[in-house]
Length: 256
Image (cartoon, rainbow, N blue to C red; front, side):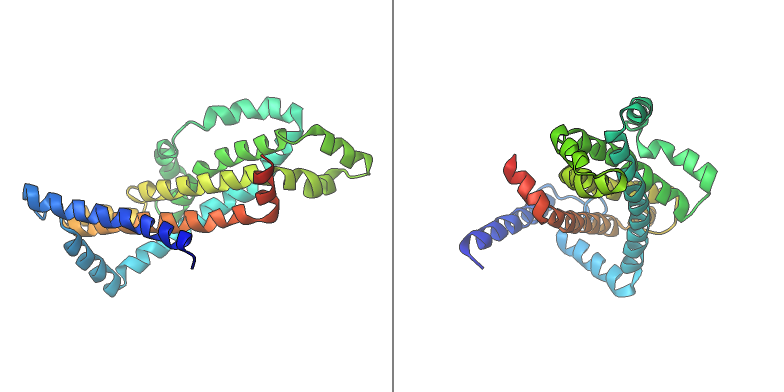
């Protein structure tokens, strides 16, 4: 490991260490009760209790299951739709205003409708994740296509490329950097929404863990759940950022 990499890692860790010190210092300085704000040690013990009993793992798996399905369904529908709308002007003029109208509506506003349509359980949570990811992904995919130099498409058609072959060899690779950016942003949004949805629509997952712990007056579990949510979100962002290292995307970034 070179010095630059080591320095960056130390800098990243130092922020968390500083947060813990400020957290503990504030409790001692202002004599905050354990009920209102447990200390780092107490939260750590609470997390160990949840992990040791297997409860934490069950809730993590439940949340990741819902996010995976909702996000996957959004990707396989939104990206192809965005690619089509980006190149098909007539369809874009009809459908894009509807997308722009629905996109600003918070997925949480759909909770009553989701419960009415799909009942209680995994389906409404997956539906909310789908909504939170679908519209932004359509916009990112569509924008990626619209940003393609029209000369590239004309050259490709002159060489006989058309239909699916044109999309797979020219349009999709050229729009991929914008799509990857959309994937990263929408995954973060999906993780935010699933936690909120689990506080209302289901009886498992990290969101439910936080609400249930609040009702049980276990503030250490509440903060522990928040820490796990942040850690998983950080891990998911780190993993999807690896897509930015793909040769075509890295080349695109250098050209800009």
